[in-house]
Amino acid sequence: MLIIPCPYCGPRPELEFSYGGQAHVTRPTAASNPSPAEWNAFQYERANLKGLHAERWRHIHGCARFFNVVRDTTTDEILRSYRSGEK
Image 1: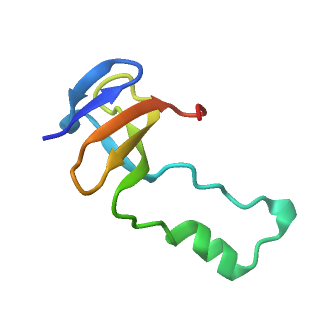
Image 2 (image 1 turned 90 degrees about the vertical axis):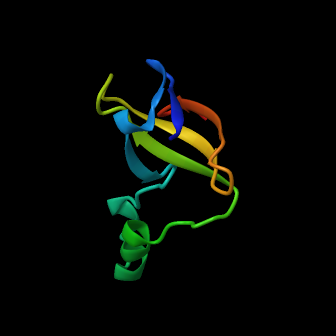
């Protein structure tokens, strides 16, 4: 079981969290008038990297906030967590 360090509540077991997918995915703006292929890429295409990966999590059984985690997908080691909007 992973122990995920919530930046708001501290370390908690992964059962308290919900995975939210890849972090830092930028939504196309309406002004850019995305093509169907660009919109499809935004909705469905994600990096499936081996190694360091930025993920979005939500502490559903705690503060209910979203935050980001940098995790090594080969070892499941969590290197850091940070609040949404931080770099």
